[in-house]
Length: 165
Image: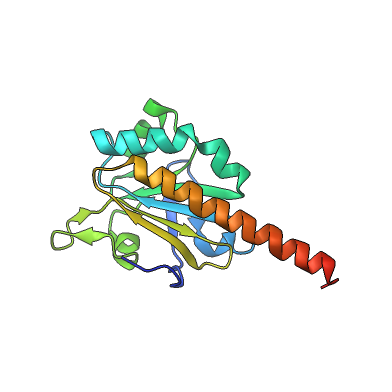
């Protein structure tokens, strides 16, 4: 896995919504919660997606977006997102290039770990969490990290205004 403080590798990926997403396009705009998960329609991945969907308003209030990524195809992602009304995009990485760059592969590169990265507006990794079974821990960690980023942005904005920077 990549570490907190590392620069997040840029990538471009097709989303189930029909658009292409490039991480660098989000620079200076919003934070990105990038979560990798093993397989659509499995128990743990469904639970994780539903948990994120249930907290989407909190994620958006903290000026962040969320994207789920695995090796499943776009049509599979469309079915999965529709079945559970996911209000966020799912990205298809059939060659596992993004997964490889984010170091989430295991079992000799054939399986994807359940890893979530929180990437700030400068494309710096500010949070990393990995739990295969304790899925609820992902959300709790994300919430704390996004709140910290929001607090830092507010302090920075206050300082710029106070010092006319």
